[in-house]
Amino acid sequence: MSTDPPGSVDAAAATQHSTELPLFPLQSVLFPGGLLQLKVFEPRYLDLISRCLRERSAFGVVCLSQGSEVRGGGDRPRIEGVAVLAHLQEVDAEQPGILLVRCVGGQRVQLSTTWQRDDGLWLSTARARADDLPAEVPDHLDATARALGQAIGSLAAQDHHPFARPYRLDDAGWVANRWCEILPISVEAKYRLMVLDDPLLRLKRVDEFLRGRGMV
Image 1: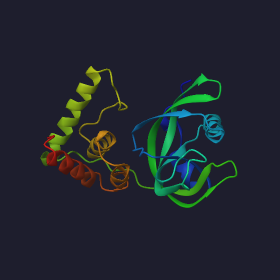
Image 2: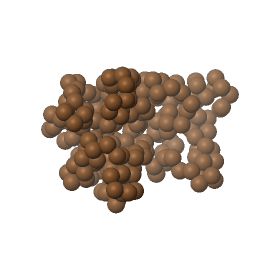
Image 3: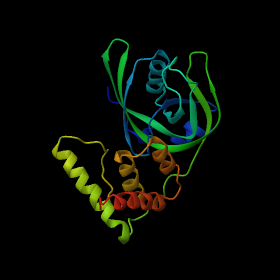
Image 4: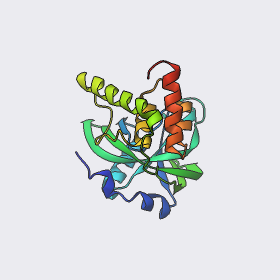
């Protein structure tokens, strides 16, 4: 089942006019514009996906800094303070009680008060953070943008397409975010990069990592 494109969901309304943003904690980081595949089977998340389909609304993907997203998974979960809105693109039933979900990342949101319902679903009050301003890739970082283009071509030759179109290789924030998704760095490092408000600084940090390993 395909859903309406992300633009059909009012991200501001999801955070400014609702006191309860449902959260999906993961031991990974969703970036704005990034793709996320989920296999959903827990009742609390099956209900969440059904609600989002009905209401054409988004949920927040938030990074777990401790614990597990699975109930009874050990340590009590500790979640970070910034989430990214996830907009449903496709929802398919693999078998009864299991949904395969494809989402795309939208706006970043700042979480404040966070709590759990009796069924284990996390919720939070949230406010929208500013989107990255469009910023051209400066000349001294152009090699990093070109390297991403080459990586996209190499992945496509293997029939692997991890990024949503359109490809914006001239936009610093887009290039930085896509590199952050595929770099072999820790979840904590990815989170620190995601919350940076300056897309040029984010791209500069990526460029430093790539040059330090001779990748550009």
